[in-house]
Figure 1 (spheres, helix red, strand yellow):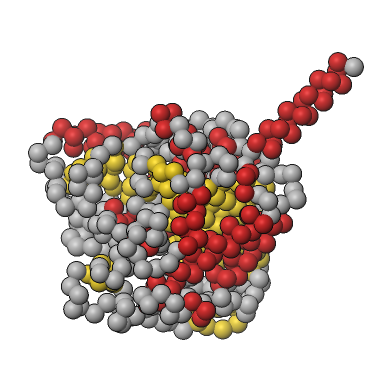
Figure 2: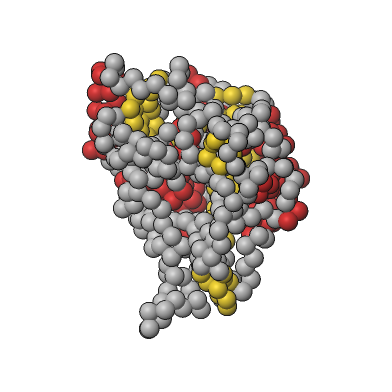
Length: 488
C-alpha cells in the first residue's frame, strides 16, 4: 500500500508542477519605437488601447533593451540567450535567402522548453536563415522541402515568412514546405510601401500578411486551451517595419500617415492575441511579453516648416510636434544611441504580476532564455553549454527587485559598434552613432563616448574626458565579456 501511496504522491507532484509552469507568449514587434505607445508616451496621438491595457494589467519595463539596433542579431540573441556578435554575423542583417545563422548544436529557448515538456511554436517573421534548395542549374527549386527551418531549432510547429516583409522571397513556410509556389514577381516599390523586387508566392498577399499571421497565432492559442501540456508561442510580427502598408481598414485612422496607421494595426494585433488568451481561460497561467526588436526607423525633425510624414507620406520622418516615434531618446533604428535599442517592454501574468507595476531595472531580450528556464522549473545549463549572456527576470516579474542580478547590458549597432551599460553609466565604443544618424563613426573609433543616463537621458553631454576611471572600468568589463565568451 505504501508503494501505491508513494506512486500517487509522485504523480500528484508532477501534475502540480506542470500546472504551475505558465504558458509563455512572446510577441516581438518589428521596428516599433518607445514613443509609439501611449503608455510610454502620453503625448502620442496614435491610439494604442491594447498596449495601454497590457501595461495597466501587467508590468512596464522602462529600461528594456534589444540586444542589437537591427533585427537579425536581436532575434538570434533572443532565441539563444547569446549575443549575436559572438556568432558569425558581426554586423548588419541577413536577407530572405540567407543561410541558417543559429548553429546546429546551439540550444534555443524552444529546444530547451521542448526538452522539458513544453509544446513550442513560432508563427511570424523568422529572419534567421532558412534552407531553400536549388536545382541542378543553380536555380531556386520551390518544390523541394527546405533543408532547415525553425523546426530544426526546437519548434514543434513553425509557420514563418523568411525575413522582413520587404525581402523576397515573399512566401509562407510551413515546417519544411513552402505553402504556395512563387508564380509571379513582386515589383520593387518606394517608401512607404517599400519592397524589393522578387518572387511572390501564389497564396501570398503583402497587405494581408499580418492579418493572416495574427489569425494563425490566435487559433493556435485557442487550440492549446484544452491541452494539459504548457506551451511556448514565439510570435514575431512583420510591422511596423517596411513596407509600411497597413491593411485598408486602418488607412487614415490616425491622421499621422501610413506609419501611424500601421502602429494602430499592431496594437489591434496585440488585442487579438489577448482576446484569444482571455476567452480561452488561459490568462492566469500565461505570461505575455510584448516588445520590439529595435527602435523605430522614423527620424525626428525639429523644424515645423520642413516637410514630414504627415504632409508627405514618402518622407521617413516626423516633425517632433506631430510624433516622436522613439520618444525622448536620441537616434533611430540601427544606432547605438538609446533610440536604436531602448524599446517598449510589457509583461502580463494575471494573478502573479502586480497590475500597473513598473520596473526601472535595465534588462535585455537576451534574458528570455534564463527567464523561460526558471518559469519551466528547469535548471539553466552552464554558460559554456547554453545561454551565456542570459539572466532571469522572474524576480522582477514577481516584484522581488532585490533578488535580481545581471551583468551590465551590452548593446550592438548596425555597423558593429558596441556599448555597455552599468547602472547610470553608458560607454559607447565609437566616435559616432554606429548606424544611421550623423556622425556615423566607426567601431572602436575614438574618442569614445560616456553618458550619465540618470542625469542626461538624451545623451547630449559626453563625460568621457572628465571620467577616465569609469571609461577604463567599463572598457575592461566589455573586453572581459569578449574574451570569456560569456557574461554570466
